[in-house]
Image (cartoon, rainbow, N blue to C red; front, side, top):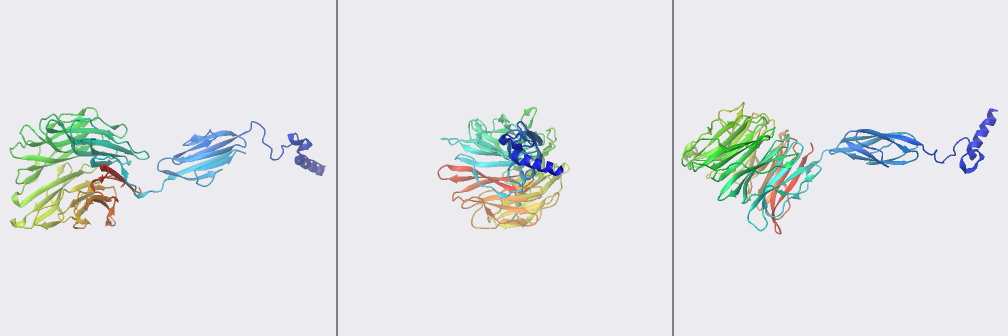
Length: 546
């Protein structure tokens, strides 16, 4: 009987039980749809950063989820990586690494989408134009997440008046539409920017001819969450403002320091402090050197993450000069001003200076200086430096590299940058049109100066833009006649690399600035002339691969 039953079952299966196409036998006919209402479960698991969505709808998640689909349904799954991620591959009922996978729901299925970190991108992006014509003097800053702010002067249409304009960059979103940042009368002159790289909070300070016959001191805050803040007038003095500097701490407290003609009818050094809870305070004098004929100017200020501040400025008598300093505690209370680098008389000339600070509140001061040993030519021109650590200036000064010998005392303003750990890079131009640089490990003296751009007949036409990352890699940018923009990168292993041309225009580029974060990702900004529009602001992004 067993053999009979086997034959009977085979026959029933083959003919559908003899009942024609309606499938009325013991078993469903092969190739016919399953019973109406049958469903199967599709479960999706996700590792890494990204989302998976389905069509038909039912699945859309960034973690793990599932849905029931009618039996026989073709379900298309689409994987969308989060920023900085790529799809590493599918597993389970899907395979490969294409962004789309289709499965047929003939049974319960499970799928896993694995997202992994995107491979690092290295090098320069394309140049972008950010401004209308008539723009100049860009200033850029970049935070630890790669967010950037860029400000510049912009001529108002039909007038010879410079306004303050800006744009914000967000990774994944690009640059915001440029906008005017103030509504004052009169031209903007000097612009300064400071950023707390960890939080992205920043301060922009500028001088503007907003009072009859006198420049005023203005500032605004920048918050990565809310964007541009409202402009604030920092002083109410009748005298004109000279040059300024600004800094910001980890809590968003900011400080501006500037020179201004005060009641003594001479340039004096003033400061004003901003707190997120109280806004800007009242301008105060931070030195009392009220001597007729003496000018205090060119202030530089830095602010530690914990809020302490340090200022340095130049005191000039008309025939000689010295560097002076003052400091403020985290609450904004200033001490007494004191001479830092004394005037050595007619055998010495102190030039311009720059000031930078690390995450621990240790600072470096660099300045140009020309000495006339023995009172006769040639001058010995060099960059010098002095350290501030442990809450005090350290004794003595030291020279950066060998002096440049010339019958004329000439060095450009040194540009100084330090990273969070205190590693430093300083760069300057010489009279022979060489661009020089030197580096220093945290707490150490600068090494030998290095030629970044050799002496040449083509003149240097800008100060260097400069940045340094947490691995002590650095970048310098400069323009040279007849108006070309170049960069060079520095690594600890290889030193300064070859010069790289950053634009291909036949028209003049100028005023480059570099913003770099601790990962070495940078934004290069500059102004460039276009015959049809005038000078416009351009940017290029550099990706470090980190």
